[in-house]
Image (cartoon, rainbow, N blue to C red; front, side, top):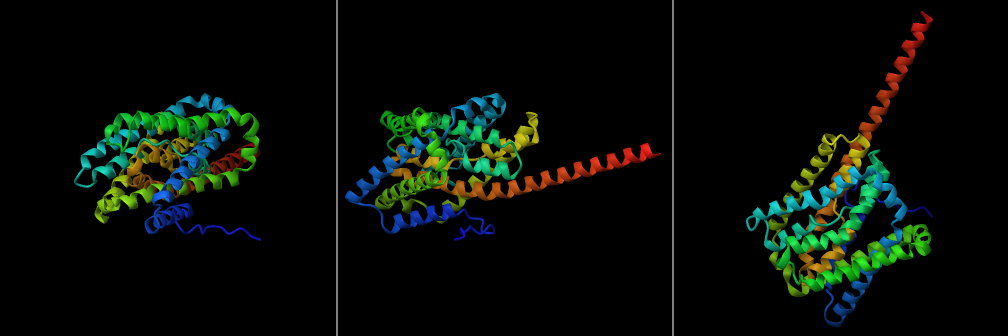
Length: 346
């Protein structure tokens, strides 16, 4: 049987449709009472499993090899955990005219989340950039984010985070960092198994995220927090996120040029330094924001879809530019060869 492929002309990621469907399911049939307790427990277990698999997949050798390209990785980390948060803090001036305070909290949290791994690699490869650098940059960002994101949230969001406290930080350590370290320790024995079953484990990743989304939005429906968001506010949020994404895409591309990186490295910097990870952000939000997690993850979900669409267009353009450069170089080489042959003949 032939596998069904998602039509390339449809700009929406099919997984985003599943996320939206999960939100709709939570709106129609939210988990209540004992069902909510079961969903919460399952979500906690799914988060731990998710980060355990991350730890089991990340090769220590890849990390050590990637350290050789330290300038690129520092640039990506600076974009992810310094420039992005500064833009988030600057958006504070849009409250309450454009953004409500809860939406701003979610937007600021979005800027604190680590970069993606899979999509950064895919787009870098499509654009003919430095794929090994993208792999290491995304992996480093995810690893640093396990510690940096909660600490930045404690510093920048403070008491504004629903339920944030020392207990929340302890939950982050127990639910995210401990499973991740356990995966790293056991990687010697299970790493090959995990890598060989990449497709199945990828399905586990995605199902875990869907469960986290369902649990978070169920709590939001039960507490009626959706009455706080109007279509105008959502429209304002989309405009603000589009502006942040545009700034980061321009900064990573031209900043890489100013730092004298080659074209292949600039592509890796652009795609790794301008993205935010839905897979890492959702579990953290569910722990940090508690009952307000539904509104907190809404900006991240919107930004995720936006970055996929825009970066797909940019990656295709970079690929065409690379193909044109190769063609031009080949033509120039052919011309030089022909001239050289004619000169010797003369």
